[in-house]
Amino acid sequence: MTRTIRLAARQALLEQRSFWRSTEYALFTFAFPLMILLLIGAANVSSHLPGTNIKNTTVFVPGILAFGVIVAAYVNLGSKVAVLRHDGVLKRIRTTPLPSGAYIGGLLVSTVATAILITAATGLIGWLAFGAVPRAGELLALAGGLILGIVCFATLGLAVSSVITSAESAGPVAYASFLPIAIISGVFDPTFSGLPDWLSRVVAAFPVKSLAEVLQNAYAIRPFPAWDLVNLALWTAAGAAVAAWRFRWHS
Amino acid sequence: MTDISVIDERPAAPAPDGPAVRVRDLRMSFGGTEVLHGVDFDVRCGEVFCLLGPNGAGKTTTLEILEGFRPPTGGTVRVLGLDPAAQPARLRERAGMVLQECGFPRQARVAELIDVWRAYYPNPRPLADLLDVVELTGMRNTQVRKLSGGQRRRLDFALALAGDPDLIFLDEPTTGFDPEARQRCWAAIENLRGLGKTILLTTHYLDEAERLADRIAILRAGRIELCGTTQEVAIRAGLATRISFTTPSALRRGQVPRPAGIDLAVRGPESVCHTGNAALTLRLLLAWAAEHSLGDLDGLAVTAPRLEDTYLQLTRDQP
Image (cartoon, rainbow over all chains, first blue to last red; front, top):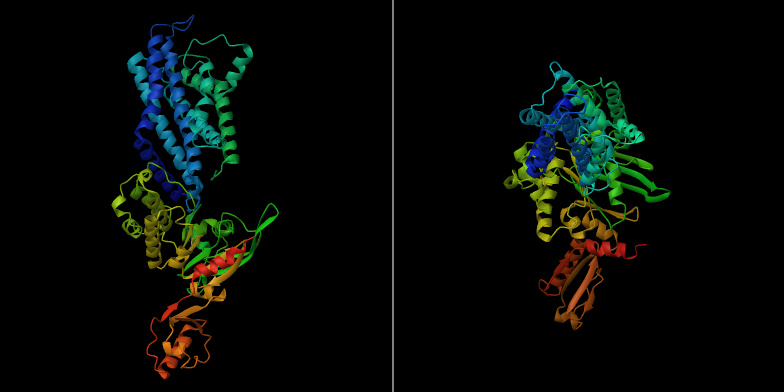
């Protein structure tokens, strides 16, 4: 067991080094959520949620935290595993005695590290630029929500990697499968409303809005997100099941 | 996943004189079509064994079964005393594998990647040693994506060698390479041989088999046609050593008798014979020449049977 953990840590280190070495890729993975944060945040800086004294940015910043988690965990990991499979790296790993748990574990640990760095940068800039801070005593809830979100979207990333059939389509498939949902979930616009009733229900069933609401609850008093927590747990279980069922070491 | 169970259950290494690989009546079918029809061969410890055959003969399928990636439909396979399909993890600690078209993590550096690979194995070879064997010491800090095809293949060898395996599988190691890259790959394979590793390689290049292999098995349409050393294979295919010399004028004019016991053909200026025993024939020839004062036989040439002749003969009537 200790050997597996040691090997997973080693693998995670290699993944992190590789990630930062491809400067362009790392920069844009970071820049995407941060640019959206600054640009859309600036347009919302003086407005409040309708009928409340909650600033729009207080809800918008945790929404972008959720967005950063999804980019780092779902898009990055999903497209990366698809490319590793397509390039035959996974097949090569199978020629060694490395336990598969150590390899997948290493990929996950590296993903968690990237996601934490992105959310830390987002949270810090959200505080400095818009004064958005978590509610007193809610830091632990925020950390818990982030970890749940990272784990949930990382398993979904592993699951989606199995349906991507080429390295070229990895990025587009990963982005296109969540951006539309993120938009109608109101992640980029806290005042977003006016969806037909049935569509609201559909959106509520996806994990994007659930993660945003769990994180928003740590910044502003909202109804306790009981359903959202259950929903994230369900999606995590579904993602893990599909990943385990569909995972292939070669294309 | 406890280390103890792995050590406890590990069988003793095969005796040094036992074969590294033993294949008996190996059969493989895909969807009702049999592609291997009872393949038999042994790979001895410390030798370079080459599975030679045209594309589609079943070389890669055979290798994938030996590597534990596919369970065979029938027959028995033992690799280092292990059943590859049943004990793949234990096999991979002791056998290095170079597959066709296997990628690398693109941003990793050469030495960094080899070092990560070393950590996968219980008794890795030293890093400097690995770089040296595959002649990549000068590229140790280069990112993998910047390596040429030949350099990547040599990095393949280094990764396969990282765990200091007893046996190395090489699946078509130089396919698609330019002559210079092939030469360097061959040199790297010679280095692996120099370390005393048993090597099982597949190829459809004759010159590669002839250059590298101690023994060759010719696989055609799922059957082993011939197996042995390069020369044995050629001889068993019915080809013989060719001995020729400039016809002495006394022989041409009929002033001396033909040598006894030799089927000599006098073709004008050149005399030729074919033999399965070159040494005996040469001795007879030279004794005959001395007896009739013909000197040392001008232009005497002995040509070993060539693998290419055998191979072409076997594959010409490919179904």
